[in-house]
Figure 1 (cartoon, helix red, strand yellow):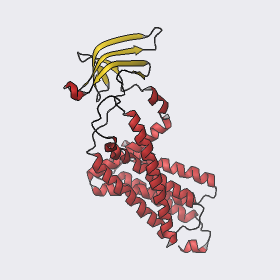
Figure 2 (tube, one colour):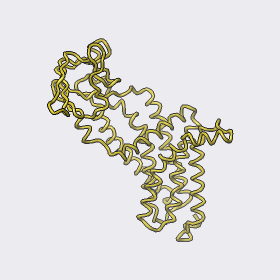
Figure 3 (cartoon, helix red, strand yellow):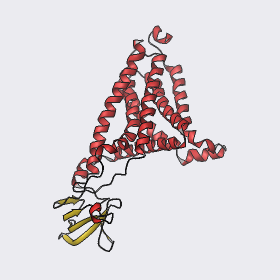
Figure 4 (cartoon, helix red, strand yellow):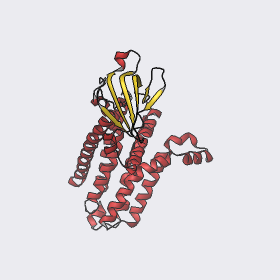
Length: 326
């Protein structure tokens, strides 16, 4: 019994720890990116927690399964029932919370970015912005924020260029500052502040986060098609990650085990994008089975899971007879 329960408890511990760390880190980062210092906060930041968890749960699930794999890759307590128990626990902690946050996420208001201060200089890219007064949209009655006495200073000139505007209107949804005639004079949406430049992630991390968000968005789309497609997709993700254990277990080199585990962790998100790509959809049309397109990604992951199982049966040699009997 201990060989069955302890690995699952190990997974739960890893999953909870990773989920907590990622949630705190991403929530703090988003708090900086979407910080509106001098506008009245219409919603508490905790209201946006479901929006954060939507994208963190898939990453935490894959990461926890990877860590369990690395911890157990050199142990002898691998049992079929124990592995099945981990799969069940991982699936429940993946599909259940994701389903709940999807329901909460649908009612979460959209976040906006308005990183301008009242009575202070704000640096964005090669510009400095100063405004004497910020009146939130609720006070202006026009659905836009009013900036009074705004100065925009361009620094990438031999002599700094200063443009002064008695009034500027800003709609955070547009990310631009407009004059009284509605003409855009400054685009702050595409220009990071100095703080945002310092904490900006690398391009590799940006690409990875985009893939994680894309996987979560596609999982949400499967839920909109019905509960069954959602559960099948979630189960396929978990089975693929646990299936890769069979390949890593055939290696006797710890460093190579770690590299393989990281490759499979990354492959989950890349393969999901590939299985949802146009090439797969066109292939389904050739065989006239495009009506099953929503299940194609899950079928791809399940096929890879079966290949991993075959690999394990062919190349995995148990070290002890009691391991073989399990």
